[in-house]
Every structure is written in C-alpha cells, then in structure tokens.
Length: 340
Image (cartoon, rainbow, N blue to C red):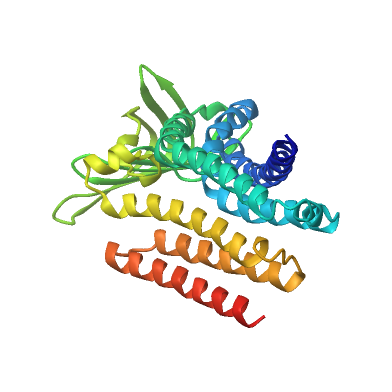
C-alpha cells in the first residue's frame, strides 16, 4: 500500500512538471506562430479571429517538435525539486531503493512515447494538412477594397499585381501576366474589382509592354485600358510539404528517409530518458554540473538532428551521423560516471 502511494505521488509530480513546461513552451511557440500569421492580416486585412482560429491547427505539430525539450526540462525540474526537499532520500530510506523511481519513470516514458507516436505518425501531419489548406484559402481570399497596398500579390500562377491605394483610389498599378506573350502593364490610376469570377482592371494613363517568343517587344501607350483576368487560384496541391505526410503516406510513397526521421525521433526520446537515468537518477546526482551536462548533451543532439532533417541528406549518411553522436554521448557519459 505504501509503495502504491509513492508511485502515485511520483507520477503526479512528474506529470505536473511536464504539463507546466508544456504550457510554457507551447505558449511561447504558439505566440510566435500567431505573430507570424498576423502578417497576413497586415497585408490583406483578414479578420483577426480567423488568424487565431487558424493558429490552433498548428498546436499538434508544435507539440511534436517541443516534446523532447519538455521532457528534458520537465524531468530535471521535477527531480531537482524532489532532491532539494529530501524526498528522494526519504524514498530510499524506506528500503525500496530505486524501484519506485524507475517504475514511475518507465510508465511515464511509455505514455509519452505513445502520445508522441500518435502525434508524429498520424495526428500532427493530418491536422497540419488542414492548416495548410485553410492558410492557403485565407491567403487567396482577396478583398481588394480592404487593402492599402498589395505587396506583389500572386493572383494566379500567371499574374502578379502591385498597387498603392489612397482612400478608394488605386494608383501606380503594376500588372505582370502571361498569355501567348509576357506582358507588363503600368497605369498611374485605375479601378480594380472582381465580377463574374474575373479580376476587372479599368486603367488610365499608362503603357503595356509585350514580349513574344521571338523576343520582339511591342509597346502600347494608353489613356484608358480595360483588362480582364480569370480568378483562378494557385493550386495548393502542387506544394509538397513533408510535414503533411502520415506514416502511411511515407510507406506508400516509399519515402524511407522520412520514415527514418520519425523513428529516429522516437529513439532520441528514449535516449533522453535513458541518459537522465544513467547520468542523474541512478546515483541521485543533481548538482549543477551534472544537470548542465545532461541538458547540453540532449539539446545539442536535438539541434543537430533538426539541422540534418532540414538539409539535403541521404538516408545512410543521416543514420550514421545521428547514431554516431548518440554512441559518442553514451561513451562520454559512461566514462564520466566511472571516474567521478
């Protein structure tokens, strides 16, 4: 009965600190992403509430990224507190040894791994795909009347628009579009509106330059000019983002590198837990030097892993590199513990 109470207390403490660090890290990461998304509202005046709702779709992906960091600092802060309050010594003095600590750590680690696998393999990619779709729809739902400037908008795959706006007047209108020629249009003033799913440009005081396939240039100056362009959005399906692929997508496409990335993330989490046990918990060593060593070892591995994942690297090189770092770290830890 007594050991059950110890298990429940330890599990509660570990979970509490994990959730605390999760809340802090996730809040910071979410706020940074919301700030980035607010650039959309600044450019095309999307409602703030739409951007905030959109940002919620990023949360599963953010959790997947920050879980290893949460694990590092959550475990450290929890056991530093238990050690400082002499609770670890009290548990050892009851004659149970490290068994309650190891068992709680194993159970907690198992639950974290299940959560991480669910997020990393299935949930996060699926929700991130919804995010990309909704972000695309927001970016391509243009209300030109609410915009003060255009910042070179891609109206479709063949058309770029830029203008300045004073009140309801459009000035310095620049249009680049392709048909059978490459065309550039500039007008000092004009009116722009959408009708019958077409962008309608009523332009005045400007010129049009067309360049054909033979590189021949044709220039037309005009006082008034009317241009209509189909409102065809850029096809978002052409944009490939590996973060939207579930494990089944990777298997079907035989993307072995991405599969390796996912399983390596699991191995890194196991490595963090194992290193924490060997370096800190096994000998109840929570001095500053030992804590810094554990933190830096894990964080350096996570940073290197992220850099490699975002670089052009082949499967064999990635695997050798990551596992060499893990092996080297474990050897250093073994030697450090042996000669301390």
